[in-house]
Image (cartoon, rainbow, N blue to C red; front, side, top):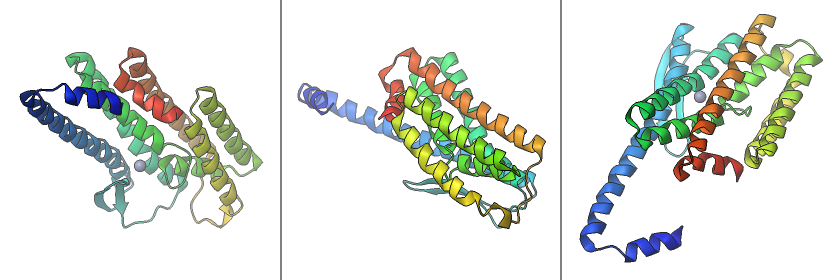
Length: 243
Ligand SMILES: [Zn+2]
């Protein structure tokens, strides 16, 4: 990579380099704005859910190198609220990826393909069952609501399937993160009865699990769809996950 960049640099004329620099700057600004848009849309999903439950919100905060956060003064009372507030971020993220996908089909501009893929990857990462990520809240709320060993078994089974899929697709990093997240939730399992949160009903557990799986599957679908188009830039997310 460095070698080709060096070759290109030495082969450029003065004027060409200048134009190149301007284009690069415009590209970096566009990427920066796109990243901010991805974070804001995701956090806005959390805000919408909080408002739906009548919670006062304090707005969206963007933290450099960390991401974003949607804050509220009020505490949640039920595990259903925890699930809905957590999953609405990635759900809004999915809407954004789908909108970018449509924009790509209409315009043919590769920028929208990149945006759809990167945004899908960002939201998929947030759905990893690790606390304090959104996925960790969702898995915890579902499994802690099951009043038996079934919840624990479901948790272990879900993690095992996740780890297996990750390794089968060569996504070692993802599998490793899943293992850590699962261990953390299993550790907290013992103390779940001390929580003041109202558990999910059987229907709520199934609904939450289906919503989670559908969101994950759709985001993976977006990434795989653009990866099969074959552009090197769009293969990047799969390379990152597989490293
Ligand atoms: Zn989130």
